[in-house]
Length: 276
View (tube, one colour):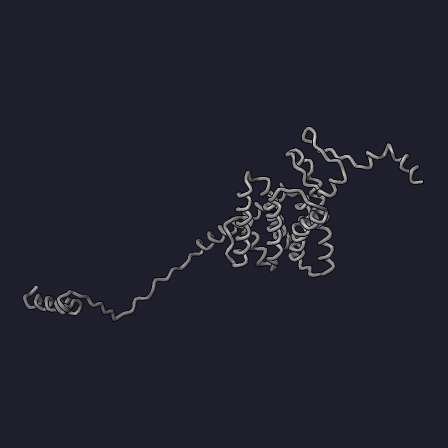
C-alpha cells in the first residue's frame, strides 16, 4: 500500500470518527446517524410449532374435561348418569357445572376448620368474578366453567347464590324448620337446575317453576340420604320443628326416631272413648 493511499484511508477514518464523536462542554458525546432504517425482527411460527401449541392446548382441555367427569362420577353418580342423557353439544358444560357443585358441597366435610372452608368459598367467589372477566383461574373446574360461560352465556347470579348458600351451611347447625331446608334446596339445587336449563337454551317460566320445586325436593332428599353419614359423626341436620314432634335420640352412633303417635298408640282406645 502506498503512502498516499494510507493518508487517504487515515483521513477517511478520521472523518468518520469526527462525524460520530463530538466534544461538547468538555464531554465526549456520540452521535448515531443511520441513513438506513433497520426493520424490526419478525418471528414466523413454523407449522410444526403451531401444531405443537395446538396439541398442548387440546391436551390441557382434555385433562380439564376428564377431571370434571371423574369428580362427578365419583361424588354425584346420579348427576353423572343424567348428564349422559343430554345432547352431546351441552354434555361437557353440564358436567362442568355439576363438578362445580360437587366441589362446593364437599368443602364442608373436607376441612378441619371452618376458617379454611370459608377461605375456599372466597376463592370460588373470586374465581367466578374472574371467569366473567375472561381471566379464569388455573384450575380444571374453573377453566371448564369459563368455557361453559362463554359458550352458553350463563347467569353469574346463580353461581354466586350456590356459593353463598354453601357458605352459610358452614355454620354446621340444624335447620330450624322445613322452610329453611326448602330455602337451602332452592338456593343450591334449584340454582344448579337453572344453569343446566340455560345450557340447553330453555328460557321458559314453567320450566323454571318446575326446576324450583324439583330443587327443593332434591334438597330434602339429600338431607335424608345423608342422615346415616351424619349420625356416624354424631350430627343431626334434620329440621328442628320436625324433631320436636318426635323423640329423636342417638344410641351407639345411630339415630332413633320415635313418633309421638307410636307412643300414644297403646292409649288410643282410651282417648277415643273419652272423645265419644
